[in-house]
Image (cartoon, rainbow, N blue to C red; front, side, top):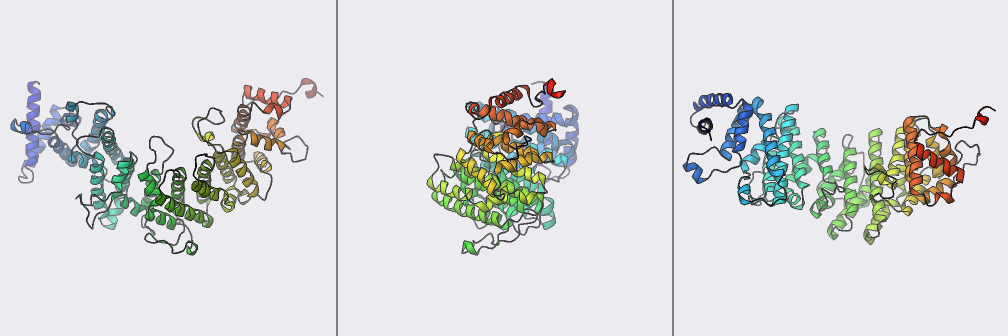
Length: 610
C-alpha cells in the first residue's frame, strides 16, 4: 500500500467519524462536506469514491480492526455510501445502485454451485444494513432514472437470495431477511394517507415484483412469503398485528370495489407470474400450488371481479344460489385471465396434489366454469380474454385427458370441461363474429394451438421429432366435431375452407393455421380429403382442389402460410399419402415443397396459345 493510499484511508475514516457525530454535533456537517469534496478530487469524482467503498463493503469490522483503528469496513463503509446517496442523490444514487449490482453479480453469481473455501465465505458477509439500504432504493418517485435504480437494487437482492438458496449460506437465510425487510417497507407505504399511498403505487409494485421473484426460487421461499413469523414491525413471533407479505399483495389485488384500478391490475399481473408452470427453471412445488388452488381469499376475490356476488370472507351456502352480475369493467378481463392460469396449474398438478387441495380445486374449477357461462364479454378486449380463457382451459384439460398416467378423478374433472358444449359453443362459434374477421382469426388460431401446441413453440411445429406433448387423435377429432356443432352443424372442412377464401387476410391466415394443425395428423388428413362441396367447379370445391390451386392466395404471408400447410402434411404423413392422393397431385405437392412458397405450376405452351 502506497503512502497515497494510506492518506486516502485516513481521510475516509475521518469522513466516517464526522458522519458519526452529526446527531450530537450538527457543526460536523460542514467538515463532512469538505471531506467529500476533497475525496472526490483525489479519487476522480463520485465514481472513484463509490469504487473505494465497494472494496470495503463485504468485510465485517472485527475487534482487531477496531483496536488498530481500521474502521472503514462492512457496515461502516456502507453508512458512508448511504449518506452520500441520501445527501447527494443526483450524483450518487444511480451510480451506487449500478455499481453495487455489478459487484454483487460478479461476487455472488459466478460461484453458485462451487465449493468456496472459508476465507472466500468470510468476504461475503451480507448484513441487514446492506439489505435495508438496497430495499430502500425500491422506493422513490416514478421516473426513468428511478426505474433504473430500482431495477438494479432488485437484481442485487435477488442475486443474493438465489446465491443463498444454492449455497445454504452460513450467515442465515437471506431470502427470509429480504422478505422481512420489504414487508416492513410495504407496511409503512400502506400506512400513509390516501394521497401519499396513491403516489407510492409504483413503489408497492416494485416490492411485490421482488417478492414474487423470490417466491419463484423454491418452496422454502414461497413458504416464507406465506409465513406469519415476522410481523409488520419486523419482530419475530405471532402477535395480533402479524400479517404475511403475501396478504398485502392479495389486499391490493382483490379489494372490490378498488379506488386504484391501475394498481390493482398490476397486482393481478404479479399474481399471474406465480402461475408459471411450463418453465423448468420454476417448477410448481406443493407450496405454490396449494396457495394458488386452495386459498379461499384468492378464489373468492377473483370470482367477485368476474361477476360473482360473494365477498372475500364467506362462500355462498349453496352453489346454486350464487348470483352472477357484470364483471369489473376495468379488471374483469385480468381476473379472468388469472383464473384461467390458476386452473391450468390445477389441471397440470392434478396427479400430485393432496386430497384437501384437490377438493378446493374442484370447487374452483366448478366456479370458474359457471363464471365463464355467465361472462358476457363487451368489446373486443373482453372477447379476446374470453377466447383465451376457454381455449387455455381446454388445452390443459386435453393434455390430461390424453395422458395414460392421469388419475380417475383428474380424468373425470377434465372430461366435464371437454364435454361442456356451452363453453365450446361460445368459444368456437364463428356466426357471432361474422363481421369481425380478426376475432374469427383468433378463434381459428386458438383451436390450432390446442390441437398442435408445437406450432407455437420455438422448436417449430410439424416435425416428427418434436418433444412437445400434444393431445391424442381422439381429442383432436372431438374438437373438430365440436367446431362443426358450434356453427350450426356445418361441416368443419367447409367452414375452414370458406375462411381461406375470405377477403380479409387475417381470417385467411387463421384458417391456414388450423389447417396446418389438422394436416399434422393422419386421421384429420383423411377427414379433409373426404370433403367435397359437390359443385365440381375445380376452384376449391374439395380440399385437394383448394390445396393445388395457387391462384387463391395473392399475398406473400398467405403464400408462406399455405406452403407451411403443404410442408406439414408431407413431413408428417409421408407413409400414408401415397395411398390417399393421386400420384400426379402428390408429385406436384412434393415439387412445391422443394421449390418454396412462390412455386406455381407451369402451364404448357400449347395450352397457353390455344
